[in-house]
Length: 259
Image (tube, rainbow, N blue to C red; front, side, top):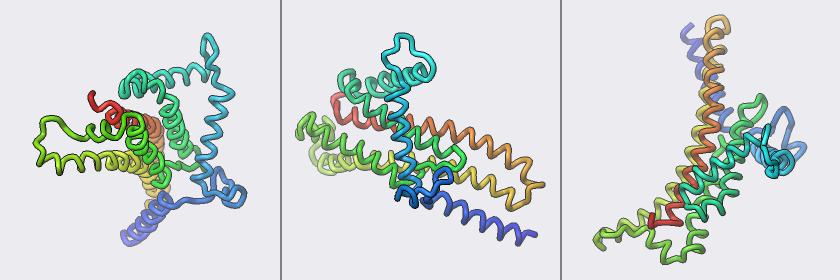
């Protein structure tokens, strides 16, 4: 009996890991490679982009005097991101001018996170090849855009702590500059790891039914899996916010090193 359980555990573990790591070609039962010549994660990003254009281009009514329905909900999120994420981390002027970018970033990540919670859907943010380009954009803003905005001299001096002896600065300044790349890398890995870990935990719990049988594991694995599913929904929202918030925080530190 124990040997049988060990064999089934190994099969389930291998299947769950492979399922979370691989990029398939099926989104909502549609073979995306066959019909659109893109994999499932690429199709998910395109779908989320189209949904955002639809929601904010046709459904969201900014001109309404009294927002209602989905416009009211979106208005709350828009104002929160503008005031609590952009303005608070980047200052009033830069915060308002960069709000559209961070709103796009937040809703794009949120859409991809939530898409993975729908049956037959996929979470593209569980792929490092998706989260890395998003982090690279933040890196480019912290370097290329910051240099264009403040000039190279001011950008460089943001990494030179005041009052530190020169010999120490020789080693400290390169580490501070390297920290920009490390922060961007952390953004990519944090989002990817959290989204993949949630799906892996869910698959692992459900695999108990296969390992121990429906009669023994079903009554407990099912409710626990539902609880994990609800937790994943919260994590999906939280991770979109964290990625957006940290990006604004890191960029604000480079744009305004004096603060």
